[in-house]
Image (cartoon, rainbow, N blue to C red; front, top):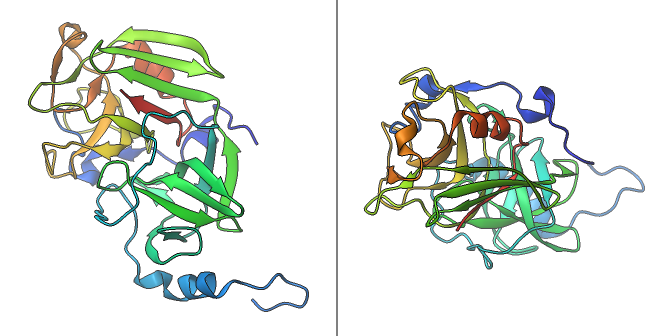
Amino acid sequence: MRLRTTSTRRRARVATAATLGALCLGLAGCSGASPIEPATAMARADLGMEAASTTFADFPKAPLDPAPNAETEGVVLRVKQDVAVHVAPGGPVFAKLPATQLENPTWVPVIAERGPWLQVLLPSRPNGSTGWVRTGGEVERARSPYVVDVDIDARRLVVRKDGAPIGEWTVGVGAPNTQTPRGRTFIMAAIEETVTHFSPIILPLGTHSETFSTYGGGPGTVALHGWPDPSVFGQAGSDGCVRVPDDALRLLMTLPLGAIVHLR
């Protein structure tokens, strides 16, 4: 299935920054059924006890992204109900992925496959956190043709579709003492800004500031967002977020949740 750039695919609804504490200021045993593996059965039985992998969570022992600069096949997963997250295929469960992130549907990118198991990027700390989920009724596969590539040093953002550039802009990035984190991440949600009005929409990513544990009461989530003063573009002056021009934001807002973002 290919993701389409429609509002029904893009998000269930746009959350408000006010409800998130200004997230980015300054920004069944049926006959004939396949048997369930014991580890999976246990995971399902205990899932209610597991912490949800969201932008507010921290899983210090989560497996880290083994290739943070690598490309992916564009496969993304829609989590339709809580699904167990394992440290390895068939291994212990350390978290659950909920069906929503910041009032948006949960879509996460797949970075590796092993039989029925898929390794996905998580939206939690530490940056680069991953986990393994099993294919089944709780998840739905799709493909995103889009990639967002941010060259932090060159302060340049490129959006690609099926490998071809469809937009390129000079952007603002983190200041030297509040740098934009590097590695591959993804567009996690879309939030309507109602607190400071510096950007009509904020696109939180599945990564966090390495300097701040919080932005204005939120969990220090890094985002793509607009900025009212164009002089910031080409500068390293943010608290870690990537500031983009209005026309860049308009394109980014149409990209599917789960789309890969490279912060290089």
